[in-house]
Image 1 (tube, rainbow, N blue to C red):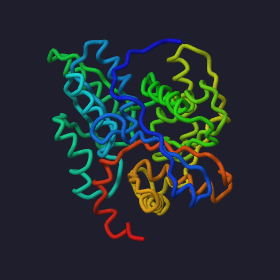
Image 2 (tube, rainbow, N blue to C red):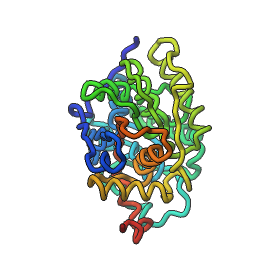
Image 3 (cartoon, rainbow, N blue to C red):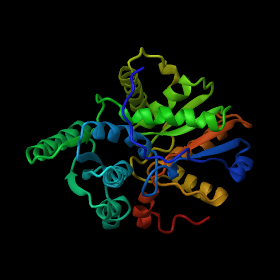
Image 4 (cartoon, rainbow, N blue to C red):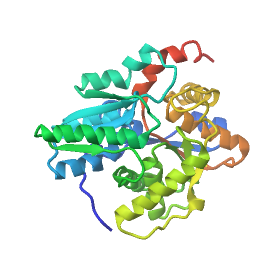
Length: 333
């Protein structure tokens, strides 16, 4: 299998903890993988992905990192922080994806941290055009190259080598070394790199349970196709034949509405349930929509009572503060 350069951004295994109150309440054995503690500036799953993107950047002698993402993107913020650790400058492109947001959303949370980290900010108005966002980033990279810089672009759209997925192949092995025997693993499914990498890594290490990706941006039909594509590209990156069947790609989109970056009732209830039960915080964009799958699937019987379940907490807590106005008056019992 091919190897790829990596920089060390996640210092040691992140904790794997049992959620005692929710386990009793839901009648399952519920655990959380605390990847909200991975890496810099409030942590998150993107740190594991960036180990490989920045590893390649360092190997190529790059001095400028360019990345694109939503206005409150955790990936963008973590890239800006991680680039500082390797001595690089960062140019971040913020895409307008979430309609009807207030000025607080546009200036707080991850946006504030990007400013604090000294990242240069570009804007891209059409956040649903991933290919166009990548083209704009590459055009800026060419401008930087003409100035004598050595840029490295972290792309967003499908069709690029999914280096970030390698980070969650490593995380899968880490999880199984900490504790085995999970019946279900629940994880975010957005760009697809975390979901596909975790699925591939778990299956590589003999996992016999079910991995469920909870949608945060696209519906289940679209996301099923996206994960299939990422897995195919991942196998090509690894230099091995495809080993994962489409029947092993499990998608749930019950908390996606009303859309990316917007808070529906199931996500809101999941935030309150986790906070009130075990004192752990979730963000509105990713982890609230992901954890919402657990009580919903227990209630439907798709997760049988007594099952051993792992919820992968991918972080994103900086964006929570951008939703202060949207959440005002909605968080009480």
